[in-house]
Length: 175
Ligand code: SF4
Ligand code: SF4
Picture (cartoon, rainbow, N blue to C red):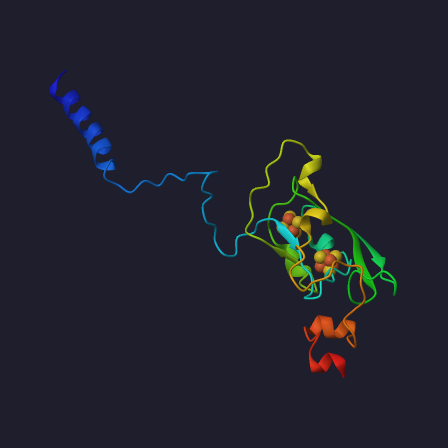
């Protein structure tokens, strides 16, 4: 080996040698999923009020705002015997097609009731098309302690406006 080649080899090994003392940047995915930015646009969630009623009113504004035509909504009327959300309407069918979604977040900006938000969950890979179209069964927020699974009436003495203003269960709501 001539002198120039020897120098090349030494400089090459120098990179390897120096790298041995650097902090590893390898991520141990999927065993240890890495953190994402707090406002990362992951899987959507359809939120509920504190009593379990759904915030979605089936207005379709999110679907109209979506540049990828990824959202399908069918609204329906609440009745006194079967109420899923405060007010007149609720989202009877709600689907997001994650084969189309580009995670832009325009849908959550368009939602008038903050029914639709995005979580940090990004683990949505699957092996078939059908399972990547999420319906209400996958998108609705889980029932928390103190909530009741709809259908059920609005809180006693409350109006839909109390729900929108966030005053259910307060003295304002029982006026
Ligand atoms: S994040 Fe963007 S592309 Fe995805 S459903 Fe919402 S508006 Fe459509
Ligand atoms: S998620 Fe929001 S914008 Fe979309 S249909 Fe429901 S209330 Fe309307």
